[in-house]
Length: 281
Ligand code: GUN
Image 1 (tube, rainbow, N blue to C red):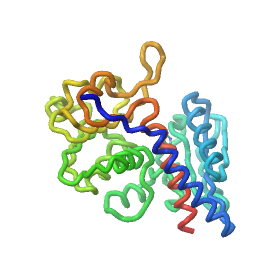
Image 2 (image 1 turned 180 degrees about the vertical axis):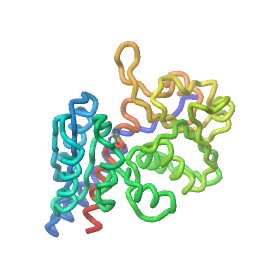
Image 3 (image 1 turned 120 degrees about the vertical axis):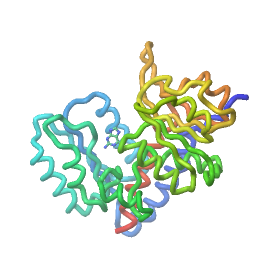
Image 4 (image 1 turned 60 degrees about the vertical axis):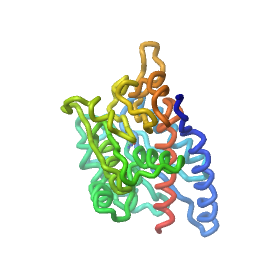
């Protein structure tokens, strides 16, 4: 059996068309949804990410403001900028691209963003809202994974979902979202013993470690749904995920490719969150 691919680009197109439609309706009421993107320093990967986010805003009819700062920017100056953007009525979402330079305390910066504008969903208020099932912004990558499961009509209730990785950005919020949909959830991480014994029991596997080939065909139950959050480079410099795609594709029921899977969905959910921040005004 060859797995069906869940196409993140195709699903993004559908969801982004809806964002554009709703943004147009807001504009008719005099509100243009706006996202501020802050980049500190010269990290090449971050530069690509912020460029893609700003372009996606433009393509979907959202206003965006890109602020690039040198890596000499002080924490105090960054906190001042966030304070000003919290007050700026043309801005509904604020995103500070991570990682930040070492002299800046990233958590302190995130906590300075108003939870009403925390479209990345990284603020502890957003994390607490997700944990307790209250309204709030969900982190974009796991939120995108949930939309991918929804797009195939997958019923999570009673299923065993295994998340590999426990980051605050993906692994932990992913587990909470799956739990909210009544899956039985296991979180695996670097200290997990016998990862394969656990993944073989899974109906859904989310690989979010940042390591190539963390999941191979012998670790997957036939028919399982495999979502690949990894963004790595192989020996030839080609983008690849955490999953051995060629092998796992032969066993899984559904699989997300890299590129063209979860990646575009992350930006799509950022647009959705920004739009919703503006709609909540
Ligand atoms: N760095 C890597 N991924 C992300 C993300 O989703 N948001 C922000 N702000 N920084 C990141």
